[in-house]
Image (cartoon, rainbow, N blue to C red; front, side, top):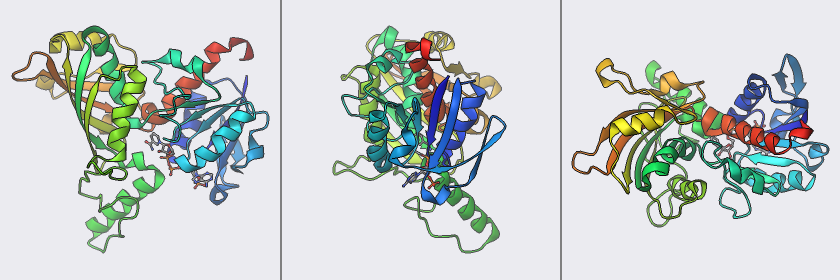
Length: 338
Ligand SMILES: NC(=O)c1ccc[n+]([C@@H]2O[C@H](COP(=O)([O-])OP(=O)(O)OC[C@H]3O[C@@H](n4cnc5c(N)ncnc54)[C@H](OP(=O)(O)O)[C@@H]3O)[C@@H](O)[C@H]2O)c1
């Protein structure tokens, strides 16, 4: 059994972490929930017992084996190394350590072996990247992907509790014909809108979110030669990110072959029957563990290019579930300690 700390327990990802630890029967011996002073004392029900959120302090990690952390990057930068020095292994959802060469960046369906190289911190990738690489990996293994062109349709829960609140309040105001609160989390009103900007712009015109997809994909897939051309868009959807993806492969691959490969791949479900109007939808993938692919079709002119639509619950596979799967990989390395 393990002593576990959930850091950022009051957040959008933290809430799902708490649910999943119970659902997946993680061997929890003792558990504590940490967050900012704003949340201290708030109740968290875990496995039928009510716990109070405690403040995130350096001392809080004493005796803890596994830390599941989902705070803003700046907070993780300070506290994850403290937790690691105290002897815990941290699985961190923030972007703070993802591109650190000493920190494994892991999607268990793609590179579970990287977990063994940790030095106390393991990074959980960006939500859009996780669902994409789950779909890319099995195709890459048989046909080598050379280029990926991806446009994302990212839900507001990707921006945490405040993102969801902003969509709700703006939508209600517009429907009721009253003045909507000014945007705070997003650069523009998100209700009944799409915003082609996630995170800050860089001098070359890409956003930081887009560059996360470029760099993290290469690191997780272990292949720096893959070209990734992303456009990241925030859409007025509460849960689940969708992605329109075009892949170019070294050898041609047909939609039938891709369907066959994906139908056997771990963590993936093919929903692809356009005649019956069957394809993945964000509304029906909320709360589901798998990544879903559909609308699989050949490029009209290029036999070595394939298009598809990919949907996943950003709070589950895009964050909390992937983090717990990483922790489960850690347990496999240390079965005696369970
Ligand atoms: N949402 C997603 O789909 C997603 C996917 C992948 C990765 N991530 C990453 O996961 C992290 C958390 O995201 P989220 O969506 O859960 O955000 P969120 O809903 O805003 O939650 C943030 C959490 O961090 C805590 N926190 C903030 N400032 C703190 C401080 N000074 N000290 C201690 N705790 C503090 C918050 O506590 P209080 O409630 O007390 O403020 C809350 O528990 C972020 O780094 C995000 O980039 C999110």
